[in-house]
Image 1: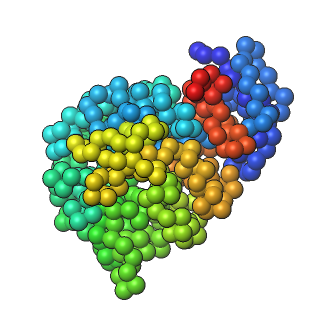
Image 2: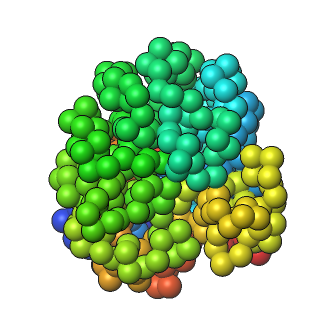
Length: 388
Ligand SMILES: [Zn+2]
């Protein structure tokens, strides 16, 4: 067992509001929150100048720091998990897919041992994005990778993944997509609408079949038209669904983000990075799915201008969220930690600073820069130890 950890005198973003308190972590959990806490042998961190919130949970990420999840090498997941705490991320879903069904089965089987066993940020499961999406809204996915929804194929993926697929993005207008949505729910995962050309009626049918989440609202979906609201309007008006927003300022302009947030409110908004492996690398070019991409203004794009993913890390999304949406730091933690933990099916132990929860914490300075990140009671990132 590792030493207990006391984080002393920080402003803690509690579910009930901010409070200056100590936090005592032991055996990976938060065991006490209060003043004047002590424990024998504890390591003590002075957080008097810092704000402490629940570590960020990223449910839509394809890699970062040079580590890509389009791989059959589970150590890429472990490398990412070791890197991600520098951005305040303490848990995540691995968004991945293969070239075809056989490759996808192999990927899930190969990556499965990393789930719940990474040090640093915890891999909570998988997000399958593609192949059951609409070729008309393929975004960065090569159309040759896409296939019609087939329940049996998904069940093979879920079996290979050991039941760890937590989220599946699908287009509800495709034949048999609604049948697939039922199978996804029955397997313990959450069906998410995305990469879709659905009209309002097809969206409603999707919600009735169990779709409860929307993958990067606005991106890779039919835009709003005044006589056919399409997936954006349908999702905003459906109280039962949560919606991902990519808050890098490049995928969606801040004004539509604010419009969406005003409708979604603090319970239904889920901030995601959709990060590529190039995130946090400060590179100006790279490769994605066999194609050259150029990086500028916080986004990576192919030669034809298609955005392939965000390169701004989660801490930047958090700061943008406050700025673009005009929300408090406590609300920003809901959008970047509490709500995504619910989507990942981990809200019983992630996403809030509370006694009994996993000790997943991010410590931010007055400029909202990450100074320290604690993952399950261990200091996984400490800016004081950084040379750059
Ligand atoms: Zn994605």
